[in-house]
Figure 1: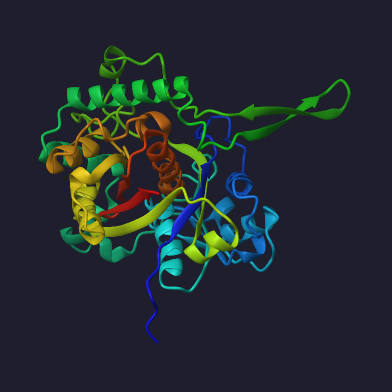
Figure 2: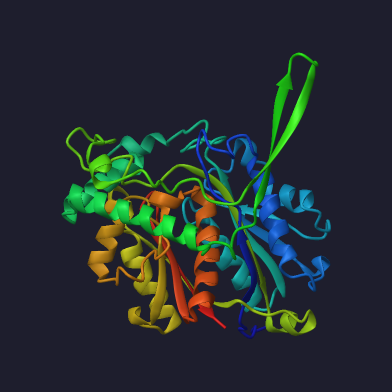
Length: 399
C-alpha cells in the first residue's frame, strides 16, 4: 500500500538552560531529569493536546550509557507523567542525535504512521564523559591507516581541518570572541526567553549541628557558558589543547555541557483535532559522510544535500544554526560554502552557549524555530559535524 506523504508541524519547542560541565550548576542533575523538565515544558506549551494522543518519543543521546542508559527516553516519558501508552526510543548519531530524533519523528508523521510525536535530546557530560565510561575500539581499526581517523580525538580532527582549509589561530580566536559577544547580547535582550524552560535545582546541604540535610532550591534561567570577561588578548594567551604547535585551544572549541531539549510534532489532522497553532514545518534532513580525520567539515556536504531535498537555494536560508564544535571547522564550512556570517549563529554558538552532544540538535532547533518567528523569517537550518566523519543538516520553515 502506498502511503501519502503529509507535512509534519512543530507545535512546541523548548529546552533547559545549558550548564557547564563538569563543574556547573547541573553537574548533579541526572540527564533523564533534565529531559523530564524539557518534556514537561513542551507539554505545557500545548495545553489543548491530549497526552494520550502521543504515540512515541524519539530522544537523541550521544553516549547512551550509565545515567543515560537503559533506554532513558522511555524512562523519562514515564517520569514526566505521560500515559504508559506513549513509547520511547533512544537514538545515537553522536552530535546530531537530537536533530536525527526530530527527523525520525517527522518521518513517522510524514508517511502517515503517526499523528503526534515527541522528539528531543539530552546529555549530561558531567555524568557520562566524552566517549563514554568504557570506550572499546575494534582492533581492525589499527590494521591499516584506512580507518585510523576514527580513533583521532575530536581536537586532532579540528587541527587537520584548520591545516587543510588554512584557518589561522587569529581567525579562530576572533570567531570565538564573536560567539561570546553575540550570546551575551542575546541574553541581555531576552532573546532566549521563548525557548528556555527554567530549571529548578535542588541542593542538599548538610547541617551538622542539627543532624539534618537542608534543601536549598534555586532557579536556573540562563545558559552558563557565555563569558563577559573574555577578549582576544585572553584567548590569545591560551595554549594549544590538542597538538603541540596547533591552533585549536579550549577557548576556540565548544564547551562540555549538560542540557536537554524537546519538541512536539503533529500532523495537519492533529492540528485541527486539538486546535493547535504550528510554530514551524519540518522541511528536510540529510546526512553525508566525510573522511573521519576531517570530520568537522561534514556540514559542507550535508547542507547542499538538505537544500536539494527541500528544493531550496542557500540564499533562501535566513537563519543557520551551525554547531561550533570548533571555530576551525565552523570557519572552514562557512568559507567553503560561502555562507553569510550574519545569518550564521546570530545569537552565538556552542563556543559560548555549550554543546551537550546528543541534546544540541534539539536545543538549536528550538533556537532557530523561535528565532524565525521573532524576526518573521521563513527558512532556517540546524547543522553540525558528527564524529567518525559525518555531517547532518535539517531545515525548518516558519508557518
